[in-house]
Length: 463
Image (tube, rainbow, N blue to C red; front, side, top):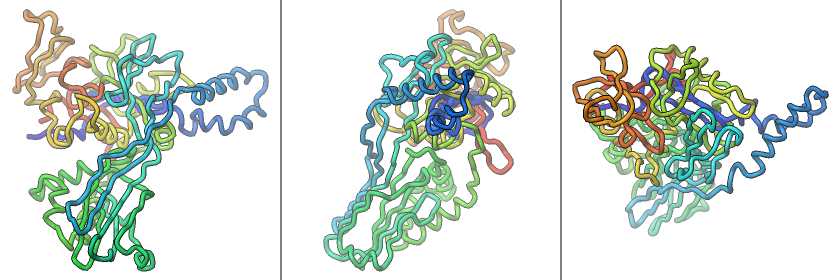
């Protein structure tokens, strides 16, 4: 049985500073998200004049704190942004050539939510997983980049015939671009558009028709802070005995792609009623304003003071309700510069896209993320060896230290279901410096399907 990394489980998630923070586990995950939301620094800065009018002597300290926050942002917490572009796709037809990609700008040095609390962990970068650490309690969070001002770019050149029509379809089958007859009259044999606004993560279909037929390319986008259709569409494709949606497109092929594939996408999308539920700070405005969000480096662990922590070698939270997860999240920090909240489904899907992007030895393939993550996660059937932390088999009532074993290691057999402490498999269950994304324990997500709250990540009993 294959493991679907787009998990359905119970957990908590940490959202922090200017971004969202994820912590996975069986019934808990937590997220810290920075405050560029309605209650965040930027919004408050916009209203600073009005607030200053209302402020009396007792409010001076609050205004000073606000000024510090704004100066911290403007004064260099974020470095210059760099141009960002996907590898893109192109067709192999010499008569009608198409190039399709997505561009934007990316923050090269993520913002620090509060320099009095957090420090950058030396040697970590956005490409490999940029880590910040709480200088007092050791909580660690990883930056998940979300490029700003993302635009689809389409270039078409026809060498022998005029172009009759150009269309771009969204992952849910809606027409994102359709040129009118008047627009087409002036195009002739070449066309370029660098300002197409993407709306969803998933496969975008660009089609070009000439008298000889229809050419198409499919560009899969996973860089937006938005829901992802890719995993669901590929799963549906497998039900039709194809490996992925691209193979469906190839099978449809030729001049029918213009009608058939978008219809396929749209008809399936009608059954995908996953929605982000309302969270106070985990909104797209905050994420895009800051160019990303932070996610917990480890699953949410239990501290002695009943607070959630995000450090290595902790026993993860399990068997908590979604309301308990929300409370644990909100109570993790009490700070006016950033807030904690549950991770949204859009944030989770963006993390899944991020760990597939190049630049790191721990980057995962689409196959490892969407199809089968057993080889790097902690699931039923997984086999691996750990040399640190603690473990608890299904038949155990408590955790056992790996260090107390005779050879100082624990070998997890394929026929055993085992819970591990956070970060116990540092050379295995990690990508972009984020640990335990695949299995071990699940986490609650601020996402719903109908009346059901969604769980992600899977757990140690999943196949």
